Image (tube, rainbow, N blue to C red; front, side, top):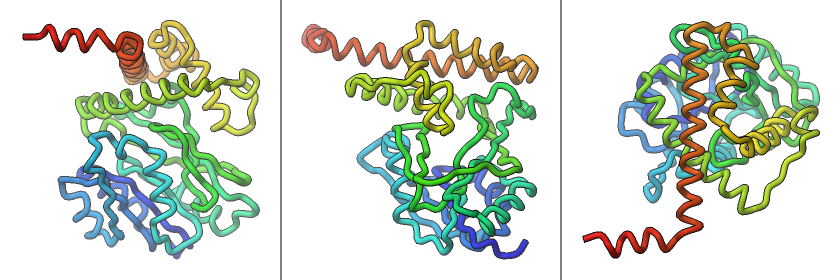
Length: 297
């Protein structure tokens, strides 16, 4: 493929298994950057072997993913990475750019009009099955001019563009279970802690929601933000998540993979609920744990 006038950015930590496939899928890009969060495996060596520019931003004072704030990590990457080109394609190591998407990206960058960003449709895979129906959201803002985009939320951040946004054709293939189910649980244990912290922050700030925006906003990210705030207030959220994913979104059409994925999403929601409740117990009865410590021999 010819030079596209496009830079690529991949965020990594211990991604020696998935990174080669991601890099091969964008071998046509002439400016690839890898921002690593302190890998202890061969991730950085692999990136350099493929010709990528590697930068490391580790968080020695934080054991949390992304230093405990994914939005801040992403915002830092967009402001400090020396991109060669005006347009950036943001990827995770377990994602692959399909040939059709590569052509669409080149076309969008070559003739963007007044757009400052483009949404890309992602396909998630589990048990060798495209989870066509159970995906919570399929559109992600991943192609953009970095000065026109920022992120908010501690985890699963919302991307906000300060100009016109459009969607392009082609798929970004995602393999979230490539390292096995144990790794998925380990990762989502960390994610759920940050989600719980985000919910608690929102409550302390008295954050509200708009039902109108949740249902009708033309901005998909504004719509998702308000939908999340409504969802956080639902009783029996884990069960509601399963019903939404498996029945309302027709996840049953994805067969065994759809059922198991819906169950995993429900379990993830339960982890968040339990951690919020645990934190609430500490907040409302701080003397309880102090008494427990004094009474413990």
